[in-house]
Structure formats: C-alpha cells, structure tokens
Length: 169
Image (cartoon, rainbow, N blue to C red; front, top):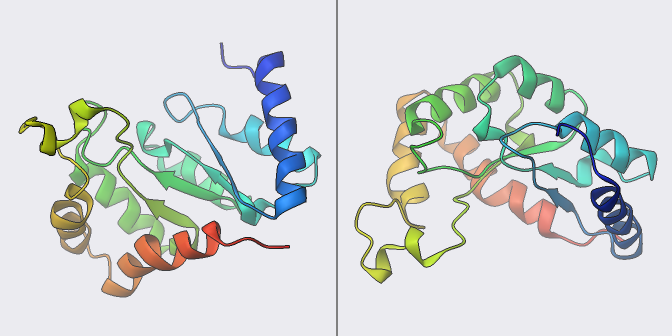
C-alpha cells in the first residue's frame, strides 16, 4: 500500500501518547524497510522525540542513501533481520553498517535477530537457521571483517539498546 492506514495511524497515535506518559522508546515495524519517513513524520507530529524512535526492519532494504536520510533525521534504525539470508547476506549488512559507522552513525544503530517462531530456533532441532546466538557468534565476525571497531560493536549491541530501553521521564 505504501501508506499508513487509518488503523495503523490510530496505533501510532496511541504509541505517541504512551511514549509521552512513560518516556519509553517506540520501536516501529516497516514493511521491507519502507514507510520509515512516513512513520517518523507521524510520530514527530505528535511531538515524539526523534531520539526515542527506532525504525525496524531497515536491513530489508539495504539502501545506503535511504538509511542516511533516516539517520540524518535523528532516529535510530534497527538492523533486525540478521541471519535471514533470504533477505540479504550478512556480509552485505555488515558492509553497510561499517560504512554508516565510519560516517559517525554508530550511536543510532541497533542490531538484533527478529526471531518470533520456533522455526527460527536451533533448540527446536532447526539446524539450518541462524538462531539467537548467530548475532554474537557469527555476525560480529562479519562486522569486524568489514572494519567495524570493537567499540562500535559494543555501542550497537550494548550501549545503544541500554539507552533506548531506559525510561526517560
């Protein structure tokens, strides 16, 4: 559709009110990395601070210029499809993240594996999937090979999530 539906708008407005009441961050869902600017526009029209907005699924659309345009607005973007090779290789993700870190955007990046089903977990006998450990055991090696410093890795995996998960009142 490439437009925010009335029901989605209602949910975003409710999230904005909840953000004001709690100080919590808002993490959004984009469809294959699209609609991020519209989400930012809607949330900021309700005075949600950009530093409390996390745009999810950005690594479904590995477009450097698009990601820069989001980051220049002050939001955090989530690379949360790590390990899902059907969307992109981890090497491509790591290369883009390395470029953005070199440009000074590491404080606005968070990394995770969006695993919501048992079929994504090795503990259930699914040996052909990345699983939760993949982010630390495998993807960090791709980041280092792409030139990302240990300080930036720690920032994206520890410091940034800690800041975003804190409650600002």
